[in-house]
Image (cartoon, rainbow, N blue to C red; front, side):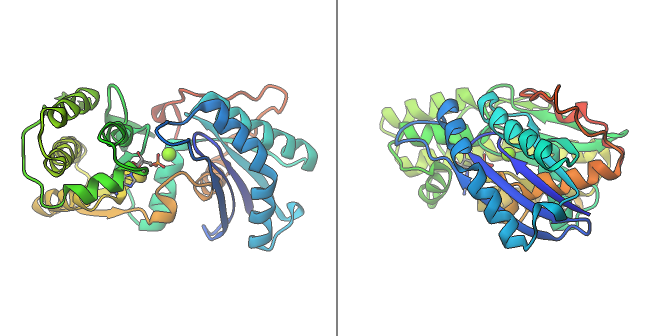
Length: 327
Ligand code: AMP
Ligand code: MG
């Protein structure tokens, strides 16, 4: 079984070819870069994706040593994401499915992050921390679905760091820059915002910017923003572990690259006799291999192909709306 996957929920347009044994035969991508000082402009991202789509697909097939005739199913990221980007991915996939007469499956982007993580880390049933630009969710499987145990009530942790980095005059990409500046910083105390199992980041960013304007050192604010936000997510993960009785934690999304975040979660896991692992970098950010692999899983779980005439994008599709009884 060979699946061709298409990813286009935000900044990345990707195409990958994966086989039924979970071997990634190719994983190509082209990423839209906003102009300096800007975030993603959705229509610009869409134009980028439309422009690059064919080239990325050809590269993916070539690298995999496959032709479209070898492909059994096509899967694409149906949501959640920015609507213009999702349409670019869907329109491309629908056209391809029509032309080649292959079944087309819609895949949930967040679940795909978890499934490629389970494949590559070998964790079986983890509590997942999904921390990307736009997303911050603590997810675990329970009673047939991936349930969201905690999530941000406003912006994602990556976007929070990016906003602070931009205001502080750092250069893109802001997350790794903040991590560098945080080294040797001193704790200055910032609001710590955990509400039940949910989190909020935007107020912390506002306060951090104010503190900087009032003359606190950059390294101290960078240190403190990291310590505060990462401690918040670590607290919620620990409670999710306690509640579910699980003993594994998986980190994924762009922010999972942060060494201090990894360290905090490792310490917490060690103290409870649990185990943690980060998804390898290539599969941590948005990529199409995760979509192709989840397409194979969904196909095996008997998910029906889409009616190409009625296919729609699902910008607000939640993790817990998918029946994931394959776990
Ligand atoms: P994604 O949306 O999964 O592609 O992840 C992008 C986000 O990850 C951006 O908000 C980056 O600032 C953030 N990021 C990348 N590397 C790091 C890092 N080392 N520390 C913190 N955030 C990071
Ligand atoms: Mg993502």
